[in-house]
Amino acid sequence: MLTYNVRGENIEVTDAIRSYVEKRISKLNKFFESSVQATAHVNLKVYPDKTAKVEVTIPLSYLTLRAEETSPDLYASVDLVTDKLERQVRKYKTKINRKSREKGFAPIDVAPEGTPAPTEPAEEEDNLTVVRTKRVSLKPMDSQEAILQMDMLGHNFFIFEDADTNGTSIVYKRRDGRYGLIETDE
Image 1 (tube, rainbow, N blue to C red):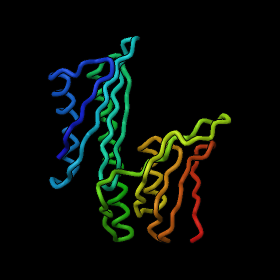
Image 2: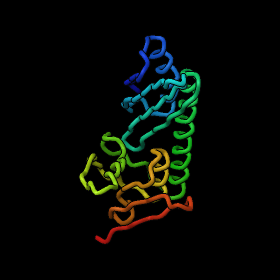
Image 3: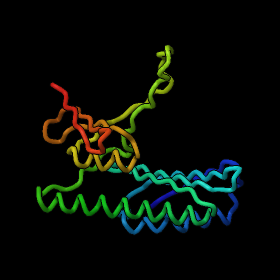
Image 4: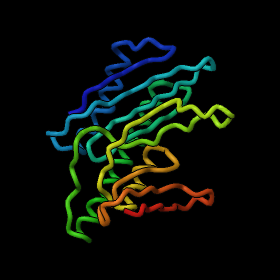
């Protein structure tokens, strides 16, 4: 079951807004087992030009769902984000089901820490101080699952433990739109 953390920036989160957000996002519960416990982090922003942005992040033990949408109507943005999240879940489940049929394995369930996310780059000027540090727990997966995770998070690279070699690997998006893989020597 999902719990909700709804925050507003430049907007007061009324009971009506909170209720609508929870009602729409709760439709994702049908994709998860009843034992799954996760918190949907919802951030609502209203800009001076009267557009509304909705960001939703749902960290699960095996996947992090993330989507954002901007439109002139807050409720429409919530609907669009929910649709994006639903497509992500369907895509992930289809891919896992296909892999399990091909390779005969079940999805790996690990600690519910969320998914690793890359650190933000330090300022590129002469100041080489680290401005943000992030801890990641590497999840065993193959490069295709890592690419899926990276795309869902909207990042340029993703660090993971290669399930075949047990080594640390990095997938990244190249400038030409294709993907690269960096493997470490152990």
